[in-house]
Image 1 (tube, helix red, strand yellow):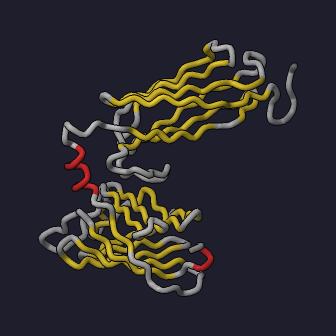
Image 2 (tube, helix red, strand yellow):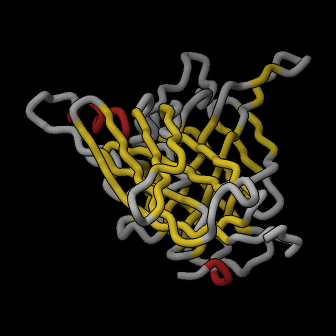
Image 3 (cartoon, rainbow, N blue to C red):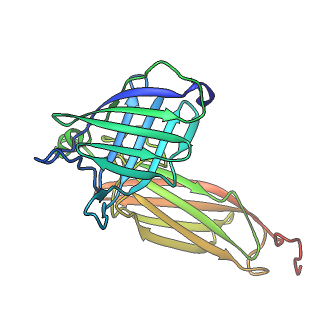
Length: 263
């Protein structure tokens, strides 16, 4: 299934977020993740703290949203959101999502990709994050982390080398993607070391992941102080008793982007 064929799908979500006694959808600081039975379609909505309008209406804050169909991804950005009783709406330039509360923590969601042809409804189910979390608290189950790394493959003189890392608990999310927050690990310790091929250390970056399991760092490549060529990037992540070590390569170009090098 590809995005140019996808227009309309209806999905039934089991949300582990209780609605209030007044039937108002409670999605503040919640992650809503749904996927099809074969995992080919994934919907991810990450909400932050809600705002209150001057008319005392609750306005949800969508921090990030993604619709993944196979290898294609639609990012939901610059979206308008609204709470309507126990239902909510997310409307951006390219997608419209209407989530109708059915009671008993259930939502019926109709989502439309705007400007496409109609397609038969597709059913998706949310991942029960709370149930999984309680299961993995069993001490008999060893913690295993998954580390995703995005880095600059090449960097010019007088430019910054950038690296981004996300950490996940494999027991909660065994196939995480960078845009997801399901299973993200907070306060994992990260050490990134940049070395030349002889093993001599150029710099070391350290830090901790945030509540979304994310950390990023950068290093300015000063002109004429760093020679060009291939460098090794060592990523070492530690969380509780779990450790993950990976090694990558990056290339430093002994020239500036505009070609005005002072070699």
